[in-house]
Structures are given as C-alpha cells and as structure tokens.
Image (cartoon, rainbow, N blue to C red; front, top):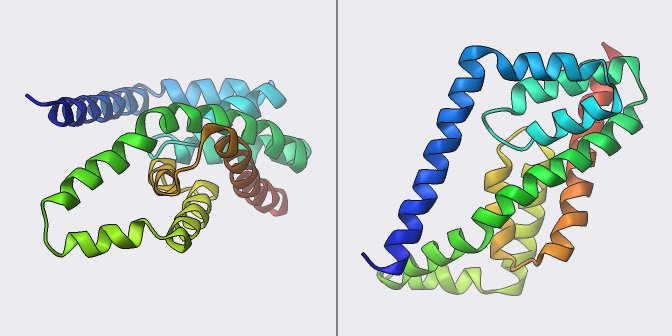
Length: 184
C-alpha cells in the first residue's frame, strides 16, 4: 500500500469513527444532556455548544442550545464564547482535513485528462479567494464546517490566518442564531 492509499484509508477511518461516535451520542441522548446541563452555565455552555457547532452530526443540538442560552443572556456574549468554542472544533477538523483533501484531489486530478484544466483553475489566486469566502460562509452557516474548511484548504491558508477567520465566520453565524432566538 502506498503513502496516499494509507492516508486515504486513515481519513476514511477517522470519518467512520466520528460517525459512530455521533450516532452513539444521538442514540443515547448524551449530547442533549451535556448541552442541556451546559445551558445553565451560560458562558461555559456557549463555549461547549460552540465546540459542537462545527460538525454536521452535532450542529443541530448545538444550535438549539446556543439559541436557548442566548434567550437568557447577551447575544453578543453567547456569540463570542460560542465562536471561541467553534474555533477549537474547527482547529481539530482543520488539522485533519486541510492539506490532506487538497493532496488527495491533486493526486486524483493527475490521472484524469479534463481534470488538469480544473486543477489549473484551483491554482488561480482568484479561485483561492472565492474558495476562502465560500468556505467562510459555510463555516458561518449550520452546514458542516468540514466542507468549508476543505474549501479553505484550497486557499492554502495557514493556521495563523485560519484562527481569526474561523472566529469571525463562526461569530457571525452564532450571532445570527442568537438574534433569531431573542426574537422568539
């Protein structure tokens, strides 16, 4: 087995493990209990809910928890602490997804005729900015951050730029959730 196949197998194993953990958390209601108990801790609850706001498997209960916490607290505080937690979650994803996905796509594109033209598009600076912006919008939304972080990986963003970008986009998304919850 070559290096790329080993990395791809490892990536699939990580994804499978995360799905199993998410299914376990959903089936046993452990995540709901954690987020419900964390709501009473206010700012720490916002941080914990923000941490879970990053994954496709945990975004729904996290968004509900952030909304409930914001009903009794400042939407701005909830967004700040929630975004801080989300940055930690995004950094975990960023560590595994950013470079590897780009490498796997590059390897795949080398073996395809028309794909070389698409790969040339990926190398354009304007595409990198579009990928960064679209990735950021996905991070701000309840869509899976894994997709947004993968897009940001195409922009060749380093970790020192990723952290404030992740915070800003998550802050905006959580602030919108908190503002919507305040109006209910």
